[in-house]
Length: 93
Image (cartoon, rainbow, N blue to C red; front, top):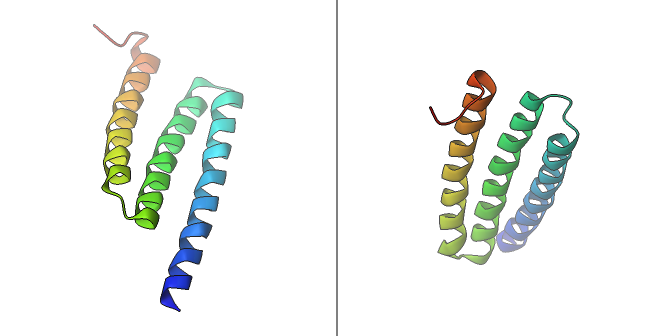
């Protein structure tokens, strides 16, 4: 019984996160301003990271957890670089 509930909860979580990733991609493509696109990118990388974590729980593989960590670090660096670019107009001084 509890295995069925866990499988159903992971299915719902994966579907919901996939929908959130699609909506974040839509915000990146259609954002009226650059700030909206950066927020869409933040949402997309967090959603992708959570999707990998849920998939790792589903299959019991450590590979998905390591991938989620890499996505988190790369997303943070990208956000900092884009924020610096939007504020100063250049990334490397």
